[in-house]
Figure 1 (cartoon, rainbow, N blue to C red):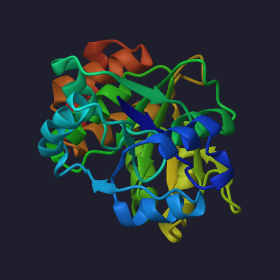
Figure 2 (cartoon, rainbow, N blue to C red):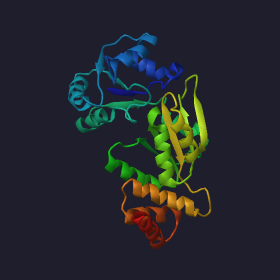
Figure 3 (spheres, one colour):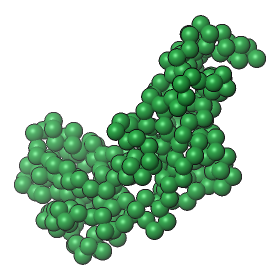
Figure 4 (cartoon, rainbow, N blue to C red):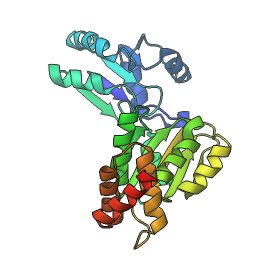
Length: 273
């Protein structure tokens, strides 16, 4: 069987008893980074053969995995931290198991998304997780378009040196929404910095945060009626990211409840200026 095993995102004490038992029982432990995982396994006093399996070779490794499972091997897979398959390798291995009818299971455990959702203080009953902000311009435009029509909590990962710029981009796209930055989750210097997008943009443009970062944005409207400033800020950000006047106006109409014609005329005047 293939076992996807969640590992601590910072605090070693968050490893589960079942995870330790599974890793000890495995014939091989497949890792996103064998050097990184060896530190964890040495701390747990687990000595097993390690196999490198990361985003660049996961497809090739999947065929090898099928042969090992067919031969009756017990394989455990761990990513660098947290839950495999959530912004980490693992999904390709699961897909291969499904395609070939091989058994697999997932062991629950530490996860930055769920931890940050609760720690932020926002309503976590409903949220969307987007992983890292796309770097490709086309994909980023689609992401921002999707985010602009969201009416609940949004969660994404970001590199520390991009946090300030990303908060600024989100402010220009969404208007000034409640937001939070959770960093160093489960570690000694864990923090949750709450504010608005504009406040957090200003703060982290001046100085990069340290450690692993999770950004949370409350996309549901906070006011009964959107201000003209919010609508203009939203349209300005959408046009800057390359959305057409029509698409920007449509997204604004859906998000703020304004008439499409009014939003279109405002976007058109901005475009001409």
